[in-house]
Length: 485
Length: 114
Image (cartoon, rainbow over all chains, first blue to last red; front, side, top):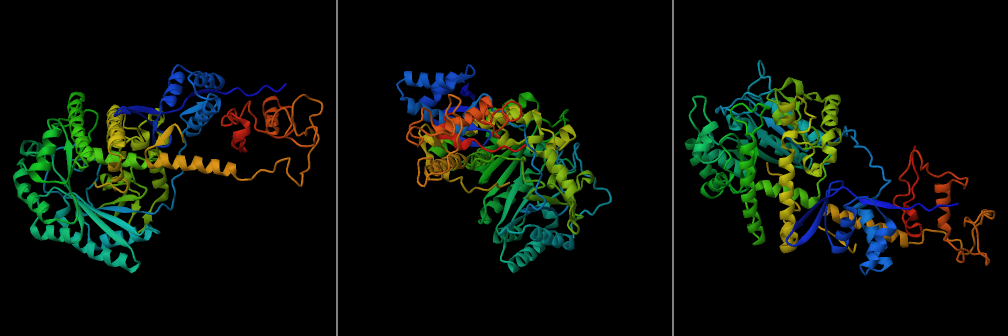
């Protein structure tokens, strides 16, 4: 009359990995990492062929010498963590949460100018794939606009004790006077309400002078330098309008920057493009010959045809091989308790330490907005001055409908291909801007680098597992790390 | 947790959540039928061979052949008990998926929202 419900189990969604002789699992539904024991491995092995009944799993464990009570306890533990799930569990469809309308702003990227003294051939602001529509718009941000932006930031950041301003361009230092003005104004306005403002900037380093460096150091302005590597690589695409390379100009200024700026880590941000793929050589040059504290790499953004600077499959293979070589070095350092400067590992690792599980690939449109020289708001600095992507103005505030549209389309739950990918908690479909350039839609998953993301995430998980076994204290150093670039 | 070791912040939160659930289960949040003063015991199930809201020969529930919580499956699986439980045929096929052992996991039998 009353047939009991017979439970049958299948394996839950997971990414298994092994390191340093131990077995681990990464759970994409939560972003959690667990080490597991032999009994758990046995259960997963039994479930690898398909669905198994509760009673059969218990019987198998009892045959292996476990008591029935312990066997039930094991299954319960695995079930609650969702390493196993009942076969009749219906996985809910991906949910696209409505973006919160009152999400407090955390950071603004001020495009203090859209002008640049270099003419890098791959530039997303001026190059072949540019999306900005600059004609007829101001070239330099005025102090009034910048101050309105600061007011907007502080007003929109309710509840936050500290906010962040990033200066960006064009070439940021072509409007250094404005930068100084903003720092003074923002510090004073924030102090009125007992808050703090932190600063950073990105520069090509050509216009750095000792007084500028001293100002940046005095106000703890974090500096990221866009640089591609040793002279032959830097001068391949980071050139003046005349075609002349920029390496010789920036070298002495970088040495001065690293020597005099003592309050924040100085980081290098390398764009990898055709012919500029020897990441090991680039890293060692920037780290040991120039002296940057950290070096991060990202492939150039380009359309599908790649122009003459895009990376094809072969060159991406070379890049990954170099990444793995640097990851080996990173791990060797970490096992000795030393910090290595390859930030692609450090950044991913710090996200794994906290168990990040992203609804969106980045904070664009959420806690972060870009501001164009005219005061238009955009999801981030990569969209400034592009009419199609304007989300409001610093004087009139955010257009909530446009913002909601951007965030709804960019939500990982809206990207069908991501729903079955174990790396989605960290990737969430990848850069909105890159998706727009390549697919014409900011909400499109960046399918051209899925394999690459999974391989890299797996590699950093391997490092994670190794450290968890051999130097677990080292992982604690990443608990409070914030993104540097 | 005996078989899994949490290694990052999110995993530690899951562990803490589960520990909190277990602690809640140990708290006396349940009115047992044996306690005094004895709650109202409805009559029922006397016509079927399945324990429902019934008492044993001594007037308690300790001597029943199956735990009283067991009867909820009769509501759910065979639908003979005329109370409202989740529709496991159409809308809530996984309603009891986290309740493998009713005596332990019955708290996981949650209300459902249409």
